[in-house]
Length: 438
Image (cartoon, rainbow, N blue to C red):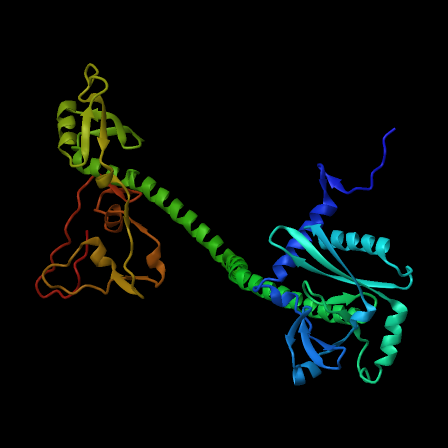
């Protein structure tokens, strides 16, 4: 059957012994100079047997003539005469204070001539270089001590509860337990609590000094994140407009590329009309990208291909099939393919000038200038309103032909088929009216 043990052990280590070791080590550190202020010694005014008052600190005599310094001590001790004290000397190995006190208590109980209720005792410790601990033990009768206190009331007037001391020949003075030593213990504990409080305050202060830069950086980071969020929310509409603008610019760029590679049919018709001789008739024109296929009738297909090859912006002229002439027919049936240069036959994207308003006379656009200095009626004007400079306009050279068609020519979509442009009639001498076109 397993037995229960009250020993506090963890992995075979006695926790009570470990704790006593830690406490003993810490108490030893408190007695050294850097940390001695954590365990301050309370000065005690000792009233000796002969009535002299001396100042003691930690059971050691400080001043033979206490004077004013002894009178301000908060604790008072009364020395017992040697006739009332029994002494014993013990030599024990070095051990903890608790174990030493237990060993002394056991020895006192076994060797005391006084009853348990009448016994008071105390001891002082003196350590040697051999590692042994020399103990000076004092025993006294409680009844005799009480009678001695009553006899010393004249010297203890207006004094707190006194301690009972016995001088030791081996070390510090011996404090007999059960009297006013509790007052000194309370004062020492209070001073010790103040010392630990100051130590804790200093530690908190140092900790605050250590974490203050990090806290400031964190607060700045939080403030920056909040500011960025505010700016992002305020800039959201602007960002949306920017996205729309970029999409519009991209669409305009694609449109510009498409329009730049697009062949203008009217310009092609105008060029073919001017280049083909009068004996040539076109039956169909097929435009696929920059490739043109024309089908028609002409007197000499080879000469027609040479004419097309000599035209600027026309290249790769070839005949997919041979020209044929029907029996008895005066003209040949031909099919010719060629490629056009978009730079010459494409749509011209010319941005209008950035002006508030501009007036363009129609006569300057048509290129017809009256000769002989004759006056002409005021031409009509086209006004370009302000704000239209941001939209590209498509300028078609065929507009000139559209505005000034030649007499006897057929006009379709800005291109003139057949005929040739005529010059305006010269005014007669003495005639001030403008020349009229037939």
